[in-house]
Length: 116
Length: 113
Picture 1 (tube, chains in turn cyan, yellow):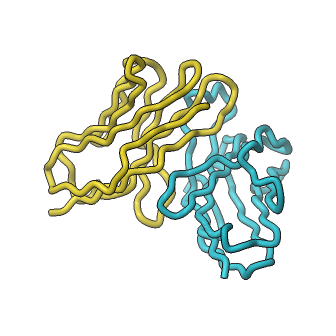
Picture 2: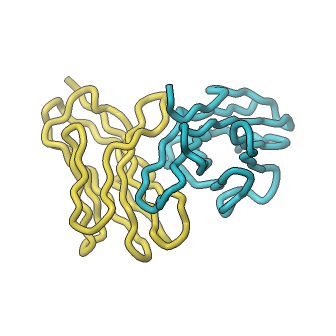
């Protein structure tokens, strides 16, 4: 499967714990985007990364959330000290390193985070 | 700012009925427009796209035409099937620097036999 791979598919955490969500982009893609989907809502942009760089984090909450896309390995979305309101589906998307204003983003199947 | 307004659901249709899901947008410049479909428990799949005015995107019997004069990108299908039951998202991507997608709130379609 050469698509966008996210893991885990489901993640359960207790309040105050840390959640780490991983995303491997499609082969040949170097642009990664993270989105959050609250129940019965559309997706909201969080952050856009290229290898070793955060390009746009205008959608990221100011506290507890961070993202990285290292030179080697998957992109990681990290949520510290989780709260109930963090329960959502988190989707990763990737696109190729070309003129991407009209390039579609390819999505993974998401990580469904549940906070107890 | 950039935004997408999508017809709210849920929408329930009988098999072989005609489908329209309305989508209008607000954007600076010349955005690219997309329809994504989300089946239960899965991620979003690109259904179709259009990158400039008057372009028509089509796939699997679905069509949408990029109308700049009405800032719309309505999704249509002439004869829906039970397998089309899913949530449909309209989205735009601006041409003015930001690379992220702006999504509508989604429309849940249920097709009954």
